[in-house]
Structures are given as structure tokens and as C-alpha cells.
Length: 159
Image 1 (tube, rainbow, N blue to C red):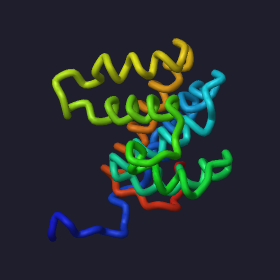
Image 2 (image 1 turned 45 degrees about the vertical axis):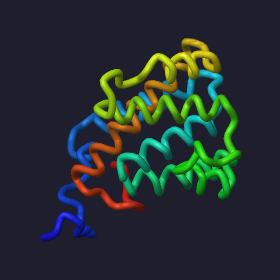
Image 3 (image 1 turned 90 degrees about the vertical axis):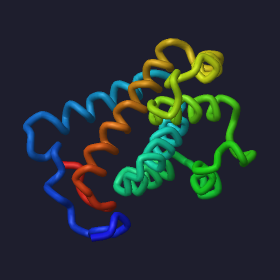
Image 4 (image 1 turned 60 degrees about the horizontal axis):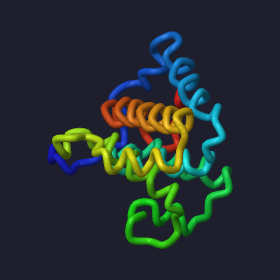
């Protein structure tokens, strides 16, 4: 089988469905991240970008759906993958997306999240908002790793 072969069958059931309390614990983390005044749209953009980086089809699929429910436009959703090269995002959103990329691509540089990236995010977000943002990025990465490893399919159930 080629490394480029895509299989349309999950390797196993979603791990969160197999272990009691796993799904509710992960969703509790996501809920906690929404307990600040950090924009719901910003969290959705971050979720989508992290999921794109990690190649998680279920999270990209659900992320687009969720972002649209939060009021995101198709134009901005299509541009998230190239957010640096488009005029559609605020400086605050750009800071969140840069933090999301650094916190997702930890092995790409000696200083995983450079001070420049952190300081830019900290110039827009207070400590509680930063906590929510970091928690949302980390939890999205958790979802992505569970789904990509077990080859979960877009449109499937989380539990």
C-alpha cells in the first residue's frame, strides 16, 4: 500500500467512545475555553487552522460547520489556510492564528512558541483569554491526533 493511499475505513471506533468519561472530559475542556469573553469566531478560526495543519478531516469538516453557525463567512473560512496572505482577518485574529500554528508545530523550531508570537498574542488577549486560547489549541490538537491516528472520517460521530 502506498503512503499516499487513503483508506475510507476507520482503523477502530473513536477512542473517546470506547473509554468511559473520555468524551465528556474532552468536551469539558472545550466548554471551559468558552468561559471567557474571547470571541467565539476567533476560537473557531483557531480550531479550523490547527485541524488543517494536522490533516484532521473530521475536525476540518465539523470546524467549518461550527464556524458558519457562529457567523463566519465562506470567504474567511476559505482563506484561513492562507491567513497571512489575505486581508480578511483582524490583527487580533492573526495573533491567535500565529499562536495556534506555533503551538501546533512544536518541533518546527528550537523555541516552539517564540516570544514574538507570544507577545503579539498577549498584546490582544488578557491572561484568562490566553488561557482559553491555549487550552482550545491543545484540545483541538488532542482531537486531531485521536482522529488522524485512528483514521476517523469526516461526518462521523464524536462518541
